[in-house]
Image (cartoon, rainbow, N blue to C red):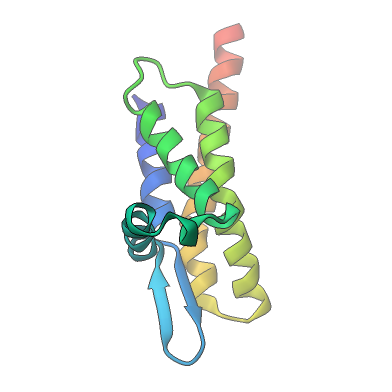
Length: 129
């Protein structure tokens, strides 16, 4: 049960990422994802980019694990890694540009990801003992 809760948290914390550019342009990841899903069906060519498709695939993998009887740690790792590419990239951009809003929005996913890795490592150690 805890593995599913962690995967739900990974999905939710990935959606609260925040992007800001220019003078007054900004978007949360959940808003951008809604736009991407809309364009996926109307203009698929416009969303064919690795930094768009990989995090989306990662979220779909994590969503798939919620329907498994026993959550696959490998699917969780792959999904988390795919999302982390974008989240960590945005966190680095936030650090470079000294934009604290972007950095703070990436921290919940990173913390949840570290907790997930720790949970799976600990559960593997306990299972082999």
